Length: 245
Ligand SMILES: Nc1ncnc2c1ncn2[C@@H]1O[C@H](COP(=O)(O)OP(=O)(O)OP(=O)(O)O)[C@@H](O)[C@H]1O
Ligand SMILES: O=c1ccn([C@@H]2O[C@H](COP(=O)(O)O)[C@@H](O)[C@H]2O)c(=O)[nH]1
Image (cartoon, rainbow, N blue to C red; front, side):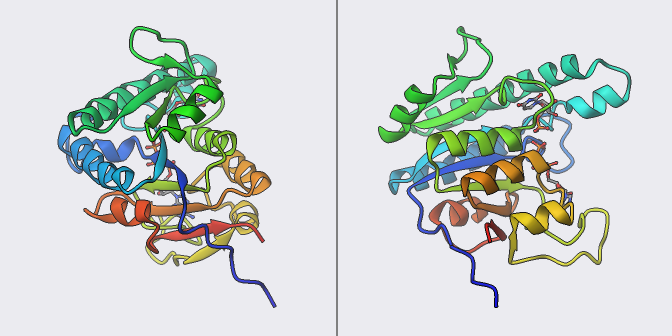
């Protein structure tokens, strides 16, 4: 008989992985919709005021994906550096909105960019989290051939986070991509092993493996409906919980 998953909730420290693509907004031609960023900032403020320690990794899919550019002929590493810089634009937009709402925050970039962001230093980031500052991790891991999902797994492991909250464009993990298969079935809970062996590509395998090895559970949920982010940050049941055996 299988044992029930260890639920990370309630949690003290979390890494929020924000979809870059979701910052665009439905039908919008702008890469970043300020009203979406503003709404996200307000939901984050509420959670942080409640005592949650929060690190944020933001994707870059609203601007650029290295793998797609490479498939169209660009050198992969170059395309990936462009993608990492795209994540910094999203990080700065988020920092501005959080500051506007009175949330103490900082961007730490994995690629040195000292005029716009601090450079990532693990111990400094940990201290800032301890002090209640929101730390936005920009520029991914700083290395090509990785993703911001893997960045979230890496930063969560380094920061000793209790959970990764993956705010994306689907409402959980399905047995196949729900955007391609309308008959796909959603899981309430699923193991890392299942995600890897069934190739459930809501996150890449490197990210799942890192979380599995370091025992960091993941909650996958839909960012779009208002209030979903607040629910997730408060540790209320939502989406799919990905966990160890
Ligand atoms: N088994 C699955 N269950 C759920 N979603 C899946 C599955 N397989 C593939 N996906 C796809 O994964 C996508 C989410 O991951 P992805 O990292 O590409 O985007 P994101 O979270 O929006 O981040 P970004 O835009 O920053 O790259 C979903 O939009 C969904 O279509
Ligand atoms: O560590 C990293 C993180 C990201 N990249 C590149 O950035 C883009 C955007 O990130 P998403 O995770 O797709 O939102 C990604 O496609 C990579 O090209 C990277 O190289 N290294």
